[in-house]
Image (cartoon, rainbow, N blue to C red; front, side, top):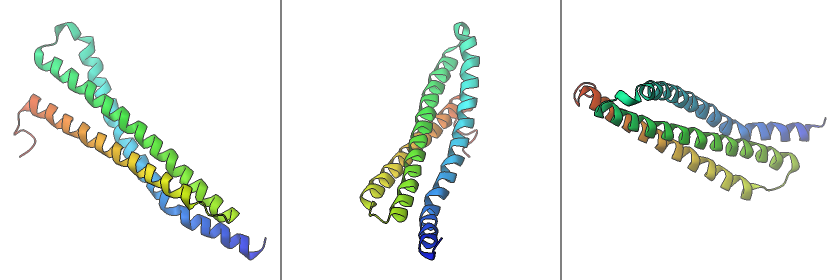
Length: 147
């Protein structure tokens, strides 16, 4: 193997390091969301079993939990899409360097799309956190956790 292909491979690896770190962060966020989803689903199942005997507060809680579950599932879907887009960016970067062709017109839109889906997932997560806070306020009162 000559020096030029080795340098080319090294350059491709260097260019892909940042997106790979981004993938690790997305993985951590998915882990948090899956934990939240798990707890919400468990609570929804418990309320669903007692469906006929729920009081008004528990019915409102059930509706909030369903909204929270939808938001978490949407956030996980957006994070998955972002992961796929970032993985494609890494692959295209490798092809750009290895084949010595300019694919920046492909990389840029892919990366922007990945960032937009990541941002959308973060907004879903923020909305879910807001609903969870409202749920806590409704259950324990406005001063129980926020002072």
